Length: 307
Image: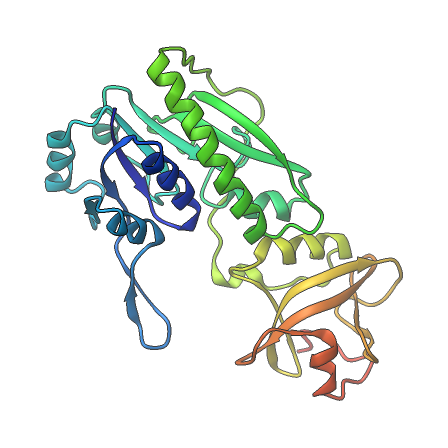
């Protein structure tokens, strides 16, 4: 089958890699435009583009998915199948209608739960114990198309969005190949979505601000779900601190107050205590709480986010 692959971030790389290694005919890769990053604002190619170029695959980066020239180019390629893995934009109906076998999406949740742009992060933020991969036949809605295959995986107590994303990316590639095999064999049976749906909206940089009135367990999930981006943060003595690893503890304390600062950093919450294990002061490297405390004389009783 002639396949056009739509994808952008690192999450999509295992799926494209497995397609190429399996001998599938990938006619072209469509990815988002290069972004300027870092202090020098240098243009950086998406991970999917880097793999496509290194594999000699034609790469398209339309500024608009509705561009007429891009649409006509897709028509000329006449793909049998379009595969979409974390492309980052919704495909319009005229694109969905091009491939003879439709458009298949690999989504990182057990649909209809967590439709949207950030299903991995929101599953951790909400304290879910399981998630998974869904392949679906795309329609014009936001992750509302008929289901093809689903596979579950556990969310470990120490999973972050980074570790869970890596595991789901690998699982997604496997489920994608299973889906393509069923298409080729003619055994695929799309099933309409049913049950209670939920939405996983995209995260913004400011969404990482910690709310110390929440319980220690909720804050621990928040820190895990926000890592590595946008990263949980708070301020201490007017210094912005990224907080990257914590452990919920039993005990009582005032929300945001440092209850212990000798050898370990213990902070109160709305329910329970938090041991801050790893953090990053503004403009500094990531460090353990012990390393952080060695360079500062923090008095017990002061507050994070004190006005």
